Image (cartoon, rainbow, N blue to C red):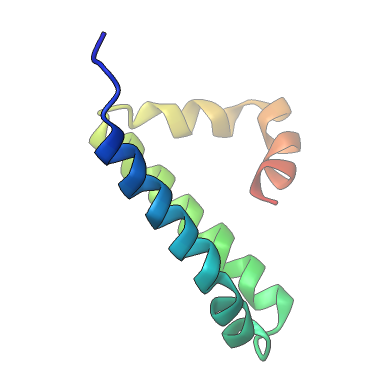
Length: 81
């Protein structure tokens, strides 16, 4: 087990605070976009990144296996939200 690196912790903490501080600017820019468009974009990009991850990890059959089960189809809308 590696010893904790305080510099890395400080850097990650600083990044977290800066990101948290910039969120209001980000949400202000989203104010004029309809909610349905934001949700659809999130679903599409999530599906693309998941497919890419399956291909990179060399598990292309993982998505097909999930698509075949009826139970998975019922859970997907909740998982996408």
